[in-house]
Amino acid sequence: MRFLRALLKIVVVLVLAVVVLRLTHPLPDLPGGEASAAIPASADTQLGAAILPLMARHEGLSGVVPLADGRDALAARILLARAAEESIDVQYYIWQMDTTGWLLLDELRAAAERGVRVRLLLDDNGIPGLDNVLSALDAMENVEVRIFNPFTMRSPKLLSYAFDFFRLNRRMHNKSMTVDGIATVIGGRNIGDIYFAYGEGTAYFDFDVLAVGPAAADVSDNFDAYWTSGSSYAAADVLPASEGGLEEMAAAVAEAETSARASAYAAVVAEAPVLSRVLAGEDVLEWTTVTLVSDDPAKGLGQAAEDGLLIDQLPMLIGRPERTLDLVSAYLIPGEIGTAQIEGYLADGIRTRLVTNSLEATDVPVVHSAWIGYRDRLVREGAEILELRSRPDRPEGASLLQLLTGSQSSLHAKTFAVDGERIFIGSFNFDPRSASLNTEMGFLIDSPEIATALSRALDATETFFQVSAGPDGAIIWTETIEGGEVVTFDREPNTSAFQRGMVTFMSWLPVEWIL
Image (cartoon, rainbow, N blue to C red; front, side):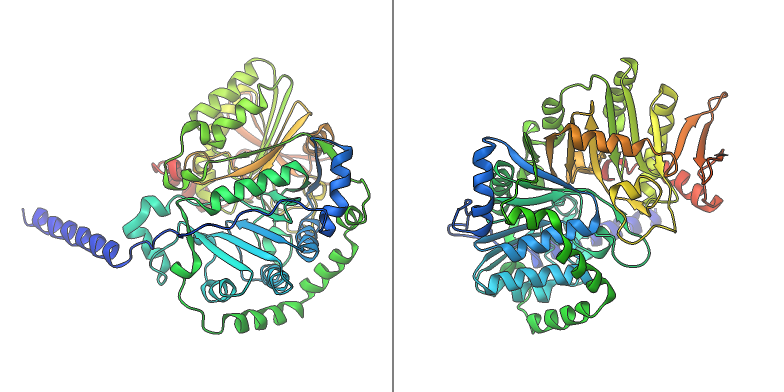
């Protein structure tokens, strides 16, 4: 009885604490007045002057070029920022305080100072430590900053989860940068060294695409929908007033510019061929049909209708595969519905390859714990499962083909190709969080060239552990090493008993719905 009374007291205290914290840390009002809107493409800008004539030659189509190499992806963003004359709209989940993070932020500041309107929409979960700088940028002329699903307690920030978990558990995972309403970069990359294959230690393989024309206009419209959504708050109403934020940023940028990484980045920007040729008016892009697929921003509040969810739109747009499905996802948890759908493909003779991180390569072991049950089931049904190996010899700046032929640290991409004809490139992980909690976006591109390039890359054997079922049904891993020798493992390769035990333990926990 005493135990029950003590437990009741604890519960009452916790409930009162939650109530008090919610009352003392309320959300501000949503921005009032007329919101700024995307600026349409114009021939009066250098990008418009270069691209609009190309669009006229390819009426109704968008020009695309894949950005698999991290340095190309960084160079595209830098060059677009420098070419901007009217507007830059930026939407990201994570913006890190490192070399590339500071250098890109400084490019936006410089654009604003020469008269370009810059709008930054950032998820509050991915900008720790940037409050002072973002507040200072927001106070600049020509810069507007909004924060998606903000934490009302700024320090310690994560304590906000204790009294506002269900709202804060929904995040904006979108990633896009659109310039002058005519050119955009979207895909899987956040902003930070690790996403552009810079720096020491783990680096992610990721995949973006540069698109111009109608696809960029669609992203601009989508940005406006998020900018004015019920989850987007003015930075001035969320962040403390800045104290020397621009000076803090200038010091960080100056330090970043002296690093070896910055020198390597500068060399890549100077040599970036595709965007420079586009600005010169050359027709070097692939012109094709590009469809933007995006969650309704109301998903950030749990209020989106089913037909407003990317997970419901995508299957209808893609259609059923007829021959092949190649799916690459860093965090792959297909769930019962997705697994049953894949089993249906296999039963119909559709070659299905699924690529994700191995346990040794993943940066989120708890996701691997949820994946292994579906993996083992699908392997036994005939799916080809490839798990990326973690390679310490990964060269800095690894490209898509380098990564998929033996040089990588960890996979972060979210892409799939169907029938070697069309490919999806975006922010959507094939897991419950992307399906139900986070907002996501991506392009579905009709491009046999890009789709088959991905499929050919997956044919390499040296990069992956190939997961299969042995004669007795037990799961085995095979690795092809240099010289063609094949090594077989009967447990997760290159992992300790402790790692495997922890993953097994996590697989018993009822947490799949938030992964």
